[in-house]
Image (tube, rainbow, N blue to C red; front, top):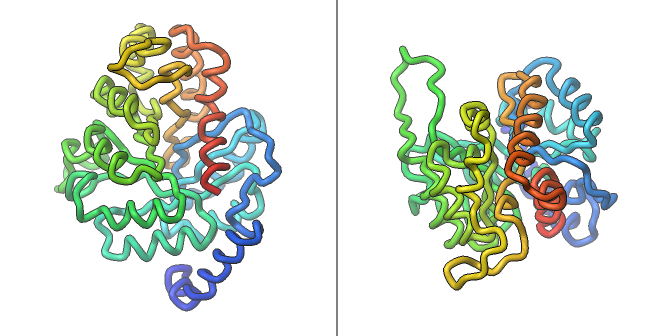
Length: 306
């Protein structure tokens, strides 16, 4: 029996397990319950059942004292769930669902019942991300205390010979503003800092305390000779003004780390980690702020929403 069919049978039982876990502090909701912050949390690690990938990923995470949000497709669920259960100190499950899937809400329930802490990477919607038709999904995620990762900005085109109803205009970072305001207890992460709409992404994050971005993808490659450019994007560190929220933190702390490893290309993890370090150092981001970017911010969110 597949996980999808089995979950229909076990839906009521799973709900009882989740209730007990939330009430008594046991079960899948207590991932990394030992309380020690890792040195790295990767918010953007894809998994679609690629053979041998999870073992390679685990080795990387062990080497850097890291944790990864494993963005798991429904078809890869069984293998991912078993591996996550064996290594809860290194992996946190995210359900990779499609917003336009007629069974999207069922999938949210089932991923949550399995102990997954978030959803994503949301991508290629048929309507804008903030369309009211998607609100029940966001409401359910907010109810469960899940984090939602959205693709923002330019998107690849793997096979140009195949017609596809995909538009980057529906995935602009500006569409996250309404979601962040409408669902204030929902934590959102926008992937890729809206590439190339960096300024829009940062400005929206500046005013929304529940919105963060990663800088995975091509941005840190194309900007490698001008990393200080990002100082003009994250400009408000230390600024005291009624025109920006009061904050004693670095503006760069609206970033979290994400590698965007997909198709099993684990080498991108090392490359993206190096790019992040180079960019943050070039911009003079203080060590304490870098600690939050690489782990601290997401660690606090995970513990707050557990």
